[in-house]
Length: 286
Ligand SMILES: [Zn+2]
Image (cartoon, rainbow, N blue to C red; front, side):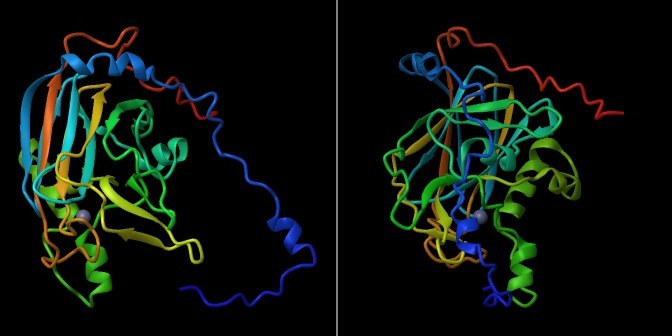
């Protein structure tokens, strides 16, 4: 908690605080996907692969551009930490900061996930969310945030007087990515990035702005569905926090597996083409 202010407010403090906010990025110029065209394919989906993500561990999968994948709750409430990469180029990966700036703190139906610079393009589109009824609760909480970073052993070490815990999402993602790519663990670790917190219910406290979590409303049968805009390598950790109602970075919480399902549609969305990499010429004024 921050100490109380030590600076006296200026005479026009109230007027300054009363200035109305404006949304940072004009949403009317953000290209939006034709959600109906994606969803028109959902009746003809054929499941072509499944991956079980064990509790307190992570797993990877690939999904070709034009296919769908779902992350599903099975057995019990469980939060998942998602990394996404261009399957052909690990340097292009999910950029949660810009995804957050363009969509909001939490993502859902119709939102697109954007990739890192210099690619900055949509790499996945959310086409179904069985938790879309949740919206924002009275605490300001919602599901599927792109604000939390991932639980990790370094922060745990910092906050627990030197604790060593090896099944934080960061470590789970590192092990799974190393296994999938053949990279040495230290190199794989450098590719692990800030996550989409699938099913996690989070927000910022109104009075102090502190990041909070609460028990996820997810139940077995719920799922979040994506359309792959490019060939994707997915990596998902079943967080040691379980439903994230109390604590993570320990073996205390009750944890459950997550299920990833890959679906092939009968066709492609009408008018759809894989998005081109960003059109900025990268000369940076030089
Ligand atoms: Zn975690």
